[in-house]
Length: 185
Image (cartoon, rainbow, N blue to C red; front, side, top):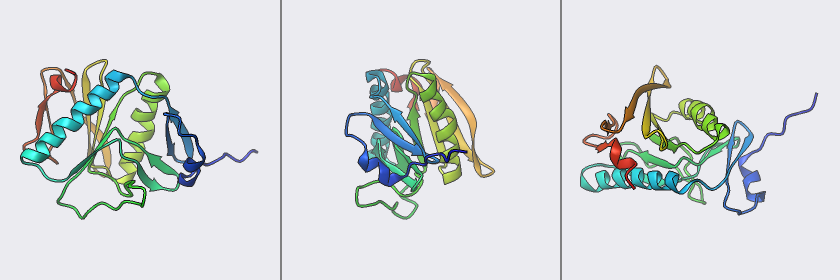
């Protein structure tokens, strides 16, 4: 029997800086090409609306594409992450990577079944195990936002929102955004 190679966080320093996104989930190296420009537009809109809410009446910190090092074998880059100011400051390493679960993680789906499965299965399970309170899975092609919220210790699908619906979160009082606006750019 051949031992399975398990990648760890320190191995990422050995990889080229070639514009690809390198992540590790359960010791497995995941490589993603640079995303479609529409993917990036949607990420930017989500970040913008959360940041506008923070400036108006919210609290906490939002990041665009932060690295999160959960363990030596789990190192991911959600598209957007938010942490409430109500909790202690989130730990970061010297490189500025988060070392704890954010309250909210957002992934915008890329093309390709392998990438979709990564976000729908691997990352959903990882975020659930690591204590993320809410996970938004955004499909810019279908103009759909799936909301996963913590229930009985795991993230479960609680809503699927489409154009005309309003995105809100019990974690973010007074935050609301028309789903249409996320896809308008």
